[in-house]
Image (cartoon, rainbow, N blue to C red):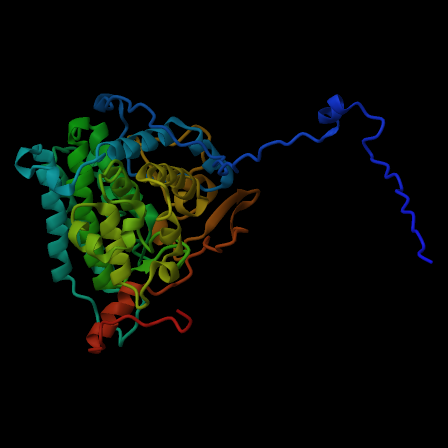
Length: 433
């Protein structure tokens, strides 16, 4: 007998039962669109160019041989808040702006002022001195060559006549201005060179500007004619006397010796139609344009001096900077670096010299009063602190450990010694590349 199965439906309760269906939208969570992550902002503002004050009145100046005045952290703070710091920033950034969108070849040497010609003649005369003071045989050593001291002594002997050709007649004026030139090529005792010596050359030009010998109309020629000539001269000096990098950061720096070519060079490329920051990895662009743009020239020379191919291994900071969106970002970053890593570093600025044209701030220490010897007589280039009972040398507590003059052989010396031995001028591969 067939059986009948009765299916009974079990009512299912919904969470929406008893709720007004027209109000359901008020019960649902709101969907908020995801915002695109914003790039982190650099907390350091882009340094602006302070106005350049008018030239100094010579009759009001008490010319004297410049000396160090930044002998403690407090002295450094006084300097950074002083009109002299603004003067240095104004001059350096004015030179930077004078190079915007200009090639080196855009400067017509036949139309430059006579003072520019005299400065170029001085640099050529200094190059001639290199041949008169050949390096001594050091048995393959890659550290500084003592013949460098003879080279500097020869510059001092001829300096007076060079400055007379620039229109400086009184011995006191020559003594003050020439001191900056003498300190533009490296330290005599340590036989090293760094961004502080490069800054001395700029201050030498600033002194001539303060004496109304280099008006703003000469700034493009200073940046694109005089300064590249100085850089080429320094390369010859570095390669001849094996100058040791002063306070080198090794691969974690822009360059063993120089900084300002990167600042001036970024300004040259500011609105270039096809050369981008990433172009520094293009060897063809470096070869074709390196003679026209300081930034590319520095990268090309840096790569040529290394035994390993690839900026990511030898100069990772340059490699990182190449990822910038445009040259404006690079130029702004270089301005920040100049303020923070050059003017803002006590190990660099403790060697800065002050006279009447570049005066010290009120309250800054004096070498004689605190018992510090002149820099030419010091063997060690470390930081000093003015404390009760005299001056003592201390080591700065930083990651680089660069307060003291640790002897570091240069890569330029390594390359020159390899050439002497007839070794192939090739690249050494990284094992994991």
